[in-house]
Amino acid sequence: MRICVIGAGVVGVTTAWTLANRGWQVTLVDSHSDPAQAASYANGGQLSYSYVAPLAGPGVLPNVPKWLWSKRSPLRFHLRMDPQQWRWCAAFIASCRGSVARYSTASLLDLAYLSRTSLQHLLDETCLEFNHARNGKLIVYRSPQLLDKATKLVEYQSTLGARQLVLSAAETVRREPALRPIEHKLAGAIYTPSEESGDCRLFTHNLFACIRSLPNVEVRMNTSIQALHGSRGAVTHATDSRGERIAADHFVVAAGLGSRGLLRPLGVNPLLYPLKGYSLDVETQAGVAPGISVTDYERRTVYATLGSSLRVAAMVGIGMNGGNVESDRIGLVKEQAAELFPRLDFSKARAWAGNRPATPHGRPIIGPAPRYDNLWMNIGHGALGFTLACGSSHLLGAQMAGENLPIDASPFLYGHAG
Image 1 (cartoon, rainbow, N blue to C red):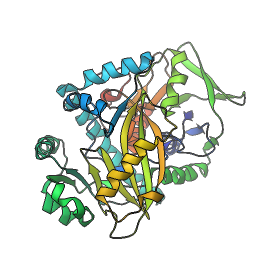
Image 2 (image 1 turned 60 degrees about the vertical axis):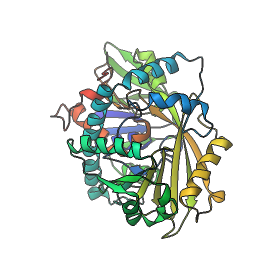
Image 3 (image 1 turned 90 degrees about the horizontal axis):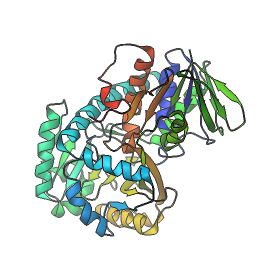
């Protein structure tokens, strides 16, 4: 079977690897010269399997007014004359209901645990290097009230198989001594020992190199897909930027935000919208940066040590220019990071900003596209692309093969609201 996979971010490359390992002929196409050049380039570095609750939740809406008015807010919103933004925001508000948030959390946990297992199988086969560490994760809280709410979430997630501990401030610092400068400001933390970290870009690059060596894979970089052509309920071929036709038995769209432009002419309009995020890389040394991944909950900032660098990722921007690194936003990230880790020199940090393709409810779209028997989607992972990539690819491969599915796929199907 011949399959064309469109997109060479972490989701597209992992999909191509998974399908090629089933023995299928795979053509991987991307407009960039190298893989992982968009949302996968410099993400938070956390493989956060047990903490995948969506952005949309009951506690979000009450905070929105103060976030919108504060220059130090983790959220910035620019209203645009864009119906897609309005539709997405309306659906996001609807997804903040407790019932939807619980459903999404349970579904994402299933997918995340599948992803953890699938990544381990991949590493057993490839011995991939990407600064991978099984170092656990701390979510730190300054507010006792927010820690109490987090404790209730821990209780709920324990019924779904998650193993997490609630720590006092002193216990938190004993787990992670690098947090001692802010011990007096902490109410406590949630510790999840099973969490991992790694460099998403390095993972994607090295897996891409493995793919290129496979005899049943063709790679076409610097090649954008101009259009998918359908007839009688099937996609017949794609045309690329060189004017060439790409024929295949099946087509998988995993092109992040570029997926909408390919799918809309076929009458498929996934509700994706870019959520802008920012990151910093700063050189570090042992004992200065955290050995455990850290999430500063109130500030929505994550920290992961990747080799000799500390990766700091933060902020959500809606309706903003994805390529710009605004000085005030990245300056705030540096300021807050320096408060936690004052021994690091953030003046020399490397800054990045990029857009993450997100659905309103936080669940990616994995499975068949409507109206076409051979068109598939693996899109909309938001900030969880690295965490969910291996599980999403495994689930999609099982769907395409017509096998018994490893988890319930219905929460991830196109048009499924939950």
